[in-house]
Image (cartoon, rainbow over all chains, first blue to last red; front, side, top):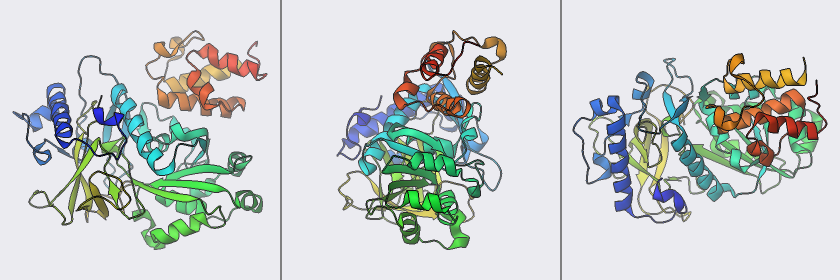
Length: 348
Length: 81
């Protein structure tokens, strides 16, 4: 158990204690995961975060990494969205980490959107829940909102067809509720919710409702539409209660359980149980403020060594505390490294 | 198809069980794949199959297959067939 999960997500933390937990977690994976130990042989305790052993996200496409210790149980595998290479990352989920991951996402979500339970409409099909032992990135992201849901509604007939919205299902969700949530991948939310012509009875039922839209997955698939985030938000909120909101969060399957919502200042802040470094893509040196490759780390990943991952996403650290008042490492997500694979994570 | 058959088909699919592994006496402890995702899948599957929407408390309170039957019978869906 990470001691940090017991405190508010954006409270000031003891950085030495965080480093100690990361060292302990690295030792746990080095002891229990042979492949990881082969990559980082003879690695001991380190004195700073940048010296901790890490893995590039691409490793998870090629190695079936899992950390096996007494009592560990891996029940399902989380798959990243399809990539241009057609190879998905595979993250082995264990029961222990799953509990921490739920706790982590819930704490962050509550900090941003409150803890009222509301109906949750998911822009996916119910059949996507039945992937055998495999879970899609989209379902995993949607399920992170489940603790805030009073009822779940899967709005699509076909997971990949934005025009397959099930109107009776949506009307059922709206009926009798002034407020509800809608989750979808960014491109799906735009195509299914904004670009579609809604039937008159649905438009009438939606008018004045307070909707919290939550989306993730990035903007790359909307490049052709040239949609700016401001337009995206404004279109979604048209004709709704002015208290409606749109939350854009960054996350990737190789950091399952970690979500980084965009705050009103335009930045993202790592919660107490996580941290972010930025590395020069060529030299690997850590950068203070320049744009580079984001490296994400957390203290909640026990089932496989995805606790410290170098992403293919570009960003920069923002010095000092964010004006939104959240303590923690602040960063700006800029986009994907050019020529990296297109997929639903940070395709900004 | 009887309601018992409909329910067993649904749960075989969600829990990834072979027919010979299934019984109406199963509990959450017996089934490795009866995790939080399966809890959601059961709730959604029950709605699609029987038309009843579990409340979150009902969904998370289900720890035996018999609990699902009891909840549905209380809503007038008979499993006496």
